[in-house]
Image (cartoon, rainbow, N blue to C red):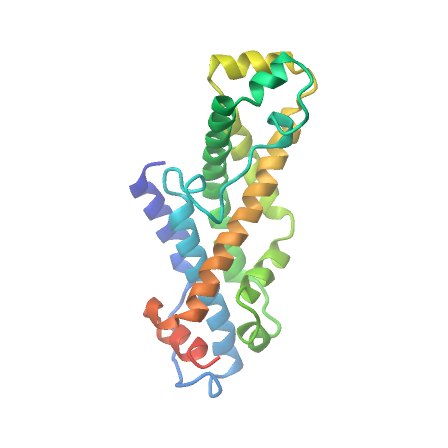
Length: 227
């Protein structure tokens, strides 16, 4: 997906979650409905910012928060023969690391609309406690709401991304390691991608809480500027 397509994708998905509402001054004076909207807005902006970074070329690989590690089955287990020794060599591990992180980008493209829809429709029982919660209280709520469904949605795309191994040495090594299960590897990378996405959203949430004025959003400034 080209950068312009990714920006359009984000615009149609995550940005559309936020809706304009009347903002009363100060967190204390805001009615419950506005507090609920503030949590949705917090998650919207946090998610938007996270995906804007992750869905760039090498977005996961270059991230200190979201980089995906190579599965143990692709080199983390003890060396038992020449094939696995080749697999664990530094040049091959570097290539595998790049590959799993590229696959994670494909998963993120599938995750973005799922997260946008969840934010739009999720029930927020106690918005005030989320606002007063820790740095990633809203992200934790989102993660609980989604459960394992994010992994389910991303798995096909990540599996496809992992099929792009094209190095002859990698293919040779993998062909000689008979107990490698690609379904297991795909699931491993997908779970790690899901965790990385939540870490990224949580990092963005913490930044907004620390400096809500940087968002330029009157509601977020009003609520989190006093929380």
